[in-house]
Image 1: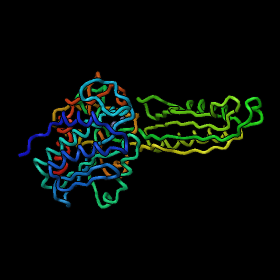
Image 2 (image 1 turned 120 degrees about the vertical axis):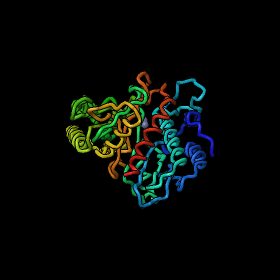
Image 3 (image 1 turned 180 degrees about the horizontal axis):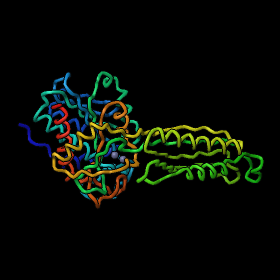
Image 4 (image 1 turned 180 degrees about the vertical axis):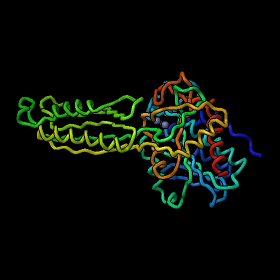
Length: 379
Ligand SMILES: [Zn+2]
Ligand SMILES: [Zn+2]
């Protein structure tokens, strides 16, 4: 008999040693050290970069379930001073991925103690969720090509909701999100003679005003459109020169991928029109793309049943969350469900510098995942 894993200590160890997206090498090592003691039937490392896929069970023909957690932290300086505070300057676990990984490891322990006789369970510790690159990298890993999953599951902790309550919904769970980079190219001139150059300042002002006017930032309604200005760069700090170039960086989000396409097109049309009016060249690119997380109806029902069967409170939510989640790439490919797990009502919000994943939540996540997975394997 192996001794029980101290999940709280493990979570705190991950919290103290955070790494940003794509650099989760030490985090992966720490996870592997624990997983190795559980002897999964199959263990893949360096999946999509630093990811890990641990498989429990031998039955390749039966139902295949994949459960995902994340490994990465954020480039945010921690302000907490508790003993497990981040030792890495400017980096900290402010999204609770340390807690998600601890939950997953708790699930691994349960599966190791009582291995699935029918079907298999694949536990994916995914890198680089925060920059939207990890899910794609995992799916592109050649070792994932021959894998098929009948069900994919993931959870995200939710500050602001009662600890241990669960938010499960059919359809989209998180918004469709994209980032736009609009580059405007004009011509510099002497600052005394702006009339001899092409200064993009007015076009920038018009694009910002126009793009922000396209918003419908009402998260309790259909037709959500959020336009956020994240960065604007114009000219240089050389006071003898009239600016000749500019960049406008926006994030845009809607409830569905189709609605987002339309919003992007509207902003592109507007930008091209303003550029034309001011005789500027324009170039528009996209990055940090998150597909809307589409929950399958039967998968959402399965999770709801697990929530009720384990005595957790089920919370209805009429609309998705406004943030992006790259688990959407998995639900685009496989039937699945991402759900929310209340982290406590008086908790700092995700990505706030004083956020810390509540250790009391770990057993709730383990119990919910285990109930959903075991119930699916019986089908
Ligand atoms: Zn996050
Ligand atoms: Zn997160």
